[in-house]
Amino acid sequence: MVRIRLRRVGLKNQPSYRIVIQDKESPRDGRFIEIIGFYNPRTEPATITLDEAKAYDWMVKGAQPTESVAALFKTTGTLDRFSRFKQGEAVETLVNEAKAAEAKRGSVTKTRKD
Image (tube, rainbow, N blue to C red):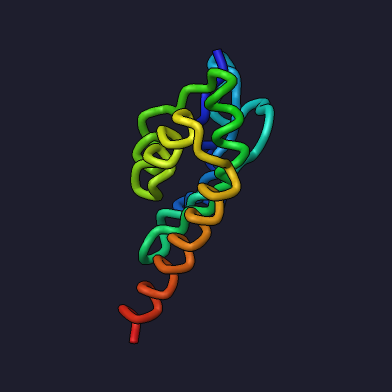
């Protein structure tokens, strides 16, 4: 079974994660199929970069997100957009919507720091 998981990278006591497509039996930091994103929980707010088109493609093929990745997908709105994708909405529309949401989230972050 193929899973969408977090793969730990970074120095000791400074974790950041790659969002990868990986076989269920592979170790956490072992062999993976493809990198589809990046997650850094140490920034304020946490940085989440994701290629949603690849995520949709793998989920259609049967890849299941782990609990932690599902929580990240819920935070970014990817799970809601994926349900709309399954109902027949165009991928380009959903990806553009995700980019707009990410840009808005970034502008909100800059306002908070000021």
